[in-house]
Amino acid sequence: MNLLANTLRDRRQKLATLIDFPTILWSGGSSPRNFPANGFPFRASSHFLYFAGLPLPNAAIRLEAGKLELFMDDPAPSSALWHGEMPKREEIAQTIGADAAQPISELASRVEGAATIAVQNAITWTQQTQLMSRWVLPQSQPEGIDLELAKAIVSLRLTHDAAALAELRQAANVSVAAHKAGMAATASANIAAEVRAAMESVLIAHNMTTAYNSIVTVHGEVLHNEHYHHPIQPGDLLLADVGGETTTGWAADITRTWPVSGKFSSTQRDIYDVVLAAHDACIDQMRPGVEYSEIHLLAATVIAEGLVNLGILQGNPQDLVAIDAHALFFPHGIGHLLGLDVHDMEDLGDLAGYEKGRTRSDRFGLGYLRLNRPLRPGMLVTIEPGFYQVPAILNDAKNRSKYHDVVNWKRLSQFADVRGIRIEDDVLVTDTGSEVLTAALPNDAESVENLSRG
Ligand code: GLY
Ligand code: MN
Ligand code: MN
Image (cartoon, rainbow, N blue to C red; front, side):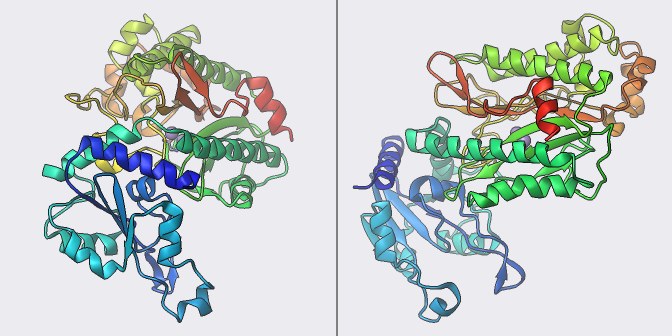
């Protein structure tokens, strides 16, 4: 049996030890862009990819007691004209080690008693709902055996096997090269789009896609900025959050922030070093058994301490974190699970991210924490502290009054050239500590300056 088939067999056999009912998972299909023959790029459902290994459009698999049945149609004879000769169902079944393979029309007779997970693709979701004769709602907590299945899949996908790690390392390595290319392209670029192009061209040249919409911007304070038209000018910081995805769906997620001129101003450098200190302190603490929420609070404390030292915040760092003063500048969580999805398994809400019995905090400084579990060997998470001057937060009247005495607003105004800084790496929890899969991309200020000078 080939390597892929072995891996997939191990995964479904592990699933069979956790549940005693069948599972059906759909891959999804391409969504029309403006008419059916002109579709958005197809992205298979991650749960399907985990057990089927290949991004097969319009396919489904049925898993039971460690066996895999593949359901998909052979390409129509006319499709060869437009798409070339494609592998037939039987060949694919062999590649993935399926125990049986049938046309998709046969699936209807195999759904009885099966659990499923809602696919994101709307057309497939409609078929899924009709065939299962029940509502399986994307973006809401599954119920009954669907919930049991979701929990079983979460327990498998929370930690990565050797085949997954090989893919994740590949995604990380190519994404590192993309960031280096982006830094090198900055000196001769006029607008952010040129830097984005340099970065994504590395992913494309390695036959990867982006794992999420790239953020490449001089407005890093807009957390998910997807505009690329802004001019980049000396004095600006450029924030690039770009990660690749392998052909079988495994992701990387990296952010670097560098000076357009090739040299941080003294205020930019001061804040950069605070964010880097938080990043390094977090990674230093990562090992099995450590609570990820403690890692988040550590980042918050190091940032608060750094801002006190710079005269921006006033008070004791722990006390400042207790009243969420750090969140004025670091409003998001320290990171998240990473795997087949950039926020792994976030289609299941907080089922993957939050340990049983835990729910999101409504605190300003904790509410956006996407992962709240003890770390375990084989988990891959991001560590991504940041500092942002978000006008909607800093100009908010309630914040202004609540934090009136702990922020030195006059001092803060001297840091106007720091709109947004984030440093994000992908960190694997090992048996004894951690390994930074993206370590080949430097993050200290001098190295970043050197790389951005081309
Ligand atoms: N790239 C999205 C994130 O960092 O969470
Ligand atoms: Mn991230
Ligand atoms: Mn990111």
